[in-house]
Length: 502
Image (cartoon, rainbow, N blue to C red; front, side, top):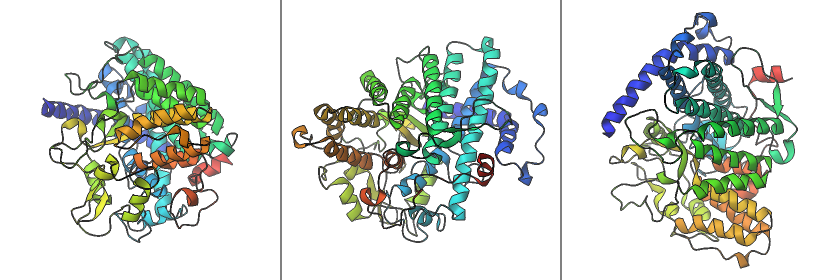
């Protein structure tokens, strides 16, 4: 059955790519204007959008195209978007997940990761990736805006709950992409709420959009996510689907589903500093009981099937058939130097202080590469993995909801309540519970929450965003020896955007 499902997915994907090709190229022109390879693209009025959006399948294909583009290197970048740069690659390196990135020519890509770990943003290889992230994200946003602009006029072509599902996911994805752009290119929220950050684009077309401040962009994200939530609430939120007869509704956790939208609202509200709403949405996800914490080490080497990414806990994950290649290039190298957390660094993160060697993540998220080097192994692809465990990169997991709820409770002075909810994750990872009586002030518990981010999100990029949200001093929270630039948390805008912004 799984094989049939894969074949069906491939057929739908190929069909979508054929239809979507011309319009994707057009949208790319908006963000890479002047590149000669786009000179032969037909004008907008000659692109057959009527063919793409003439029926329900066309809208499905367009949305699937955006999900696929969350993986692909775009706009001149060499690495995947959410599958490398925003996860196991650049953002994880910036957070010092790999303390050997200071070694020249580490991983694949020449000196790229060496420059990343030293925060050399002006380097040409880093500029290329940052520009690619910006262009790729806005390319996705434009495709979503085109879909959203078209969908209400074709409401009659949809069956079942697919109108609400497609429109809801499209609006939610638009919010996700803007939020992550904000978290990369905007000032830290603690100091830069009123500083212009990014354009929040809601219309498909070539007219430029004025830059929003951090606060304005966050409010726009919340507006979009609340709308998406109301639409997706009208779809089937009762069960998480895996393989099914309808390829489009299969594998709920690879869609930005209703519960993932709630989780994203928790993220956005926390970034804004609205802890009441952040805690409310985080607890709604936890209370749904649809993403239970693991109760044993499902990633253990002794298991016939190693669930290295704790699949049942994932609210939303990107699927990519390229994950094995990314993992090989960065970690499971047969020669050369892989990215890794050296033994001393690994012990510092996982076993010192309140940690210990019984932590499932310490035991099972590091394995020897084919060259016999101990490396982070969350994205190793074992030969016997069932389909749902293959080729996935988590974007949001339920453990983060526990951390958000713990942080919010702690901020209100409820150290006991914050400790209790943090302990639920610790216990699910094989660790002992913390004693709330041992925390003399909220700062003590905050340190434990930070340590959990450092352990939990290795190779996923979220630790970098955590550091930025709280304007952490990287010298204090990592063992980096790099000189820290004053603007370390703000990616430089592409040159063409700087020109417009000023």
